[in-house]
Image: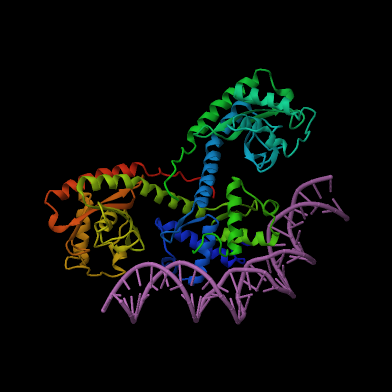
Length: 262
Length: 262
DNA sequence: CCAATTTGTTCCATGTCGTGGAACAGCGTC
DNA sequence: GACGCTGTTCCACGACATGGAACAAATTGG
């Protein structure tokens, strides 16, 4: 956008957002007629907007009472947004502490579309990490991916293999059975190790970040050049990562109790 | 809506909602190109949607990095919706307890547009209350309104008088100075009493519901026929209302700490 | 009990304005 | 310096959002 704001706006979108805002702000169920009076838009137009927003789940249409309220898709989206914000805010200081302690790069990532997506990266000095926020890596070649996947309650390896295995390096695990054994070990141990499987000469130690229900919503990893990795560093890093992950978990939003009808 | 879902949907709205959802779900800042790849919509169209959503504040446009993330208006709306939901959920059982204890009608209301709007009403047996959820009453003629207004930090009586005073009953306070004195008393006492000022023969005792910052976000009142109101009932009701309000306050969402840049 | 009002819904002709391809511009990369 | 990949502007086309009007159904009031 060249100059902010000046440009052209899509009118139906603008109006629909106003409708959504109005309904959600009322804190009660509203009728079409009320909305007409409040927003001063033609009845037919508002009718279609309310219908569209309801069909999309951003509003909920209470058929018997013929009223509208905010919908579950809107709520869910707000929740996801909030949770992700919380996660990054809570993780940031912990990541900084880890960087201070080990002088290595620390990554925050989550599962998205059968791959790992980087949510945040903290490192000492200038950027020398290969990963960038927003980039993606395979689940099976990163400690982040393995740490998450190992703690999924209903984990199914085949869901990953669907998108096929890419032999990123000589060390990348592409054999299904070998991978399954590896993941089992991660689950028992509580942390994942990856040795040059995603990128030559680079290794990672990763731990899951569990929400209040114990679901692995994200993972955090410490990555370093393989050759600089002393034998005992892995276990020390894993221990500190685990502690940090536990603290992050505690500051995530608590379990939402489901409200009656929506 | 006759049959649910079947009808006609406004396409620009549907598409824009998908865009909003996509951006908010990523948990990171996205570019136009990414969005094009993910949603498979024409670049020009998406450009306009992102622009529109940003101008409306539902997305935030990070100019220097040329990326989009969820915006403050979206966050604020989600927060309001969440808070109102919490308020009603938290108030409901307390209102039920009060109804059990006094066998009178209990109202929950908040300020909206210079008037009091009823968020919830609980009463024994069939509806015999005059107020309905969603209806409005003047601030100055209800205990709900007076309870809230008396606890506003920057209260200005003139903001109410702008819309003019309506003499609802013979008892309605329409004199500015008299009203000011009345509100002062409410503030000192911690609860509001209204005697047939809104409706003949009907009286109310109201207390504010404060959020974590001490701001009166709503009020709760107990209303009964004036003649049935024993002298000591007012103080007993006020005490129990106050306790209930305190409990509700405690279950409201805690103060959100402002996050850096948005 | 019927008239009157208010509500939600459907219909349809109108022309606005959303649309998207193409061309442009501004960068970083090989 | 040529290329690819961004974001942005331009523009002609016609799909489709639009909103008035008519309808229907529920609610009110006399």
